[in-house]
Amino acid sequence: MERELPHTDLLPHLFRQEYARITAALCRYLGLREVELAEDIASDAFLKASEHWALHGLPKDPVAWLYTVARNKVRDHLKHRSIVDSYAKIELARDPAALRPAAAHRRKPGGRIEPIVCVC
Picture (cartoon, rainbow, N blue to C red):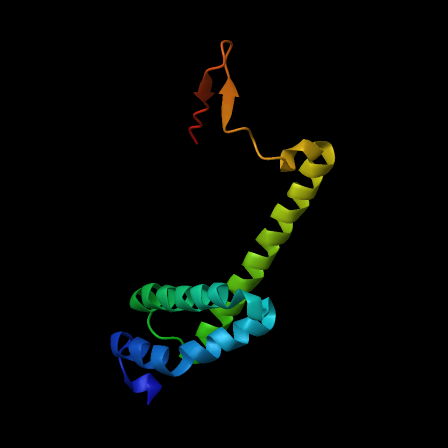
């Protein structure tokens, strides 16, 4: 039945059928504390499907395609997190004061307080 529908009709059907299953599978990779992240990644897999399938047509097995894309996104996220963590450890080893919160205000001579403005 899934292959008979055009992708615009198939995606809502697959979302209803597979979203919770994909989210649960991603929780096995990420852990239960990361349910929101698993939901975001599952939603992103469906977004990618809508974009990709519109241009390239339906894959042979749309469900497997969704699981593969979601799993690859989890791997990318975990790799990115690992890189950020390693840089943070290096930075903290170099400057332990980096953990201390910055002062929100500076005292000017004469006792006045001047706010610090940061532009990112």
